[in-house]
Amino acid sequence: MNVRTEHKAGPRQWLGLAVLLLPTMMLTADLGVLWLATPFLTADLRPSSAEFLWIIDIYGFMTAGFLVVMGTLGDRIGRRRLLLAGAATYLVVELVMVASAYAASPGLLIGARAVLGVAGAAILPSTLSLISTMFTDPRQRTRAISLWATALALGVGLGPVFGGLLLANLWWGLVFLIGAPVMLLVLAAGPVLLPEYRDRAAGRLDLTSVAMFLLGILPIVYAVKRIAEHGWRPAVVLAGLAGVVFFVLFVRRQNRLRSPLLDLRLFADRSFTGALTMLFLAMMALNSVEYLIPQFLQLFGGLDPVAAGLWLLPSAAAFLLGSQLTPLLVRRLRPAYVITLGALVSLAGYLLAVGAASPLAAAVAATVIMLGVGPISVLGTELAVRAAPPQKAGSAAAAGQTAYDLGLAMGIAITGSFAVAVYRDEIATTLPPGVPDAARDSLGSAIGVAEALPSPLAGRLVAAAKDAFLCGFSAAAAVSAGLAVLVIAVVLITLRHVRAASAPDEATEPEMAAP
Image 1: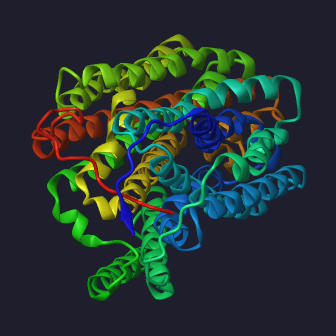
Image 2: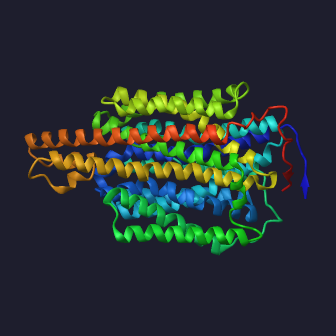
Image 3: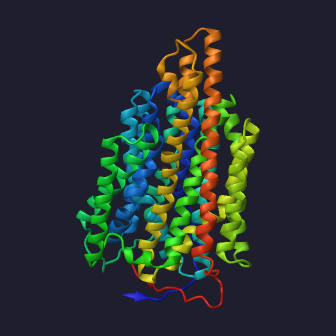
């Protein structure tokens, strides 16, 4: 039964919102913490360059791959139940990751982070759906969703700060437990403060669609990574083609089902498609550079973890400023113009990163980038949800979050692999003779190799590796700048007609489905 219930949220709802915002922020803070721990990880685990990239981005890929699946599953078994199950799984997997770090096993760590991504996919759509259920007043709901989007991306900025403080005082493997207190809080307070929500009219979960979706996205991701690292090898190309085939089969099946896993009719709306495309490109541009900056500060600049975390603190403050200014700006400007303004600011940051050659320059670039990304993160998912019919708001939110997380992961996969390729090309021409091939993998590997070499040779190796890393960093920043230009083009073409949510000629608020 659909009922229209618009009433002011009370203290219980706002406390419940706090419970939802903490895991939302922690899921992205996990990435920032891991970025700062990469020098320690590469020194102890000695992963290859491919293993290292998988450790970093398998979490984002699995989250993006399972978001749509989990969003549909939550409609059937209950959003709160799925949230609690995801929090419990997340907690257990964090313990496994600590064990894998202690055992120096890159393969076990990759597998654990893959499962962690599935747990994250269970948590994220549940938080947004529960917010929509708890806040039925239009203004309060807009404010709550804005805070949710702020928490989502603020974790990226605060993660390195938390990680730096932990790494300065504890063994690096313990950073994997940074989310444990938050998940324990969710498990304790969730049943008390959060309502249950279940769509009793939802159809059954189509497992064939789930399999087709995963068999489509994962081979394509694998192909993109391998092509960027090693070129167009036949087996890699076949994997990518297989993924395309399964995606075609997935699309055909969704068009025939009465209760599809993803309602593809949503993409017929220009605003919906534009919002998702904008989110994907913007997050891809962000992660192309942001995951390299902690390495820049520590490995290239020689800063310790605490100093690196403090240097990144202004970028977190800049994102908070940009996201909190967004609701004020959209009262005077259309969302497309606010997003364009943010993209122009982030473009300036990427161009600063292209020429960065010192920790100060890298930190300034990160601060400018995060200031511009604030409006994009806050408005992207909201515009996608607003463009969808009321009864499809849940599917729209899951699709928007998929674009967000897939963009973050692809930023590392494509330009991260591209940066590695540039590093290898550069160091191949300057690598001193007699140095082990492991130095060709990454700057962290080169520094580790240098520790076992005689002093003159070690100095030459480190200098060559730093120069090669700087070339790769500049190349990744240039790619991000190009992606920022694409964001501006997509926004002005597809979203320029969209008015602010408070505009008087907007449609009335959608009806809420009663739990």
